[in-house]
Amino acid sequence: MTLDLRGLVPAPVTPFTRDGSVDVDAIHRLGGWLASVDGVKGLVVLGHAGEGTFLTQDEHALTIRAFREAVQDRLPIIAGITGEGSTVAALEASRAVENGAAAGLVYPSHGWLRFGYQAGAPQARYREIYETSGLPLILFQYPDATQATYDLETQLDIAGQEGVFATKNGVRNMRRWDTEIPALRSAFPDLQILTCHDEYLLHTMFDVDGALVGYGGLTPEPLVELIAAGRAGDYRAARAIHDRLLPVTKQVYHRGSHMEGTVALKEGLVARGILEHATVRSPLLPLADGAGAEIAAALSSAGLARATVDA
Image (cartoon, rainbow, N blue to C red; front, side, top):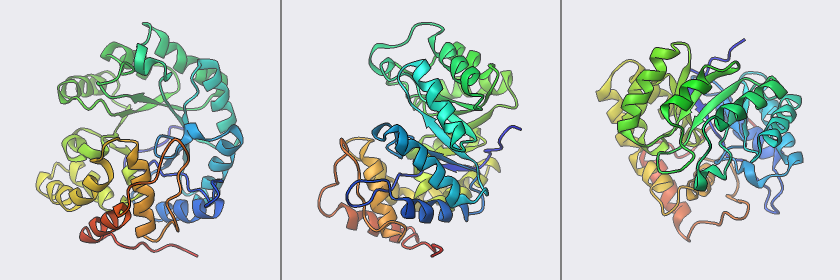
């Protein structure tokens, strides 16, 4: 059965204890809260926001299981598949299946970020992962600024492969977006198209079925509304939500490095009462003194200061 991810799909952070271990109790609070928000269609764990590449194999398994326990089968858990080699990634996907993942978000081989990829290599990566694991897969389109961004032919080839049912697009080049999204729609009408432009959601919301974003792990309620406005073609309503969230967006994503967004998300979850602290794992570092208060103030200005969390 194909998963229906048409709506908001948060990519939540991975909470840690103060000594740096995966915090299962905090995962239960975070995952349970997100699952309680109407319009959330699934959770993607072990991605960039989830510090997935900083975790061990045992921690991958623990995190998938803990989020599954948190949502109590109300939502599918989707695992980020980040292994560098295709066989390594295929085995990672198989372990994800064993621990209860319902689908996989396939990252490019990270060497491609700098050096680019050979023609046909991305297609072979997706094929091996699916044939080895049987895990339904999401095509991940990286930003145009990287060498790991897929040209349209490659995207079409992957989208047409067995097992691929959705695409998470973060190309961050609107000229390409305006050309390539319609082409994917035309070729594969059933392909679920999800934006991952955390900092440009308004600009992409009218062309997609939903959003797969780390931002959804902090502000799910207004993002569900934003997706609904986009799907209804209601620009005025979408713009109002965007503008209300803009102070938060700036505090989380308009920083020196997009990776700082993960730390900022954790600080925001402290302000919302979900996490007790914003511990991250190296090579991430804490934000500068005062950042937590600035993020909390931005959330308060957007009406998102505290969340209701089941004990």
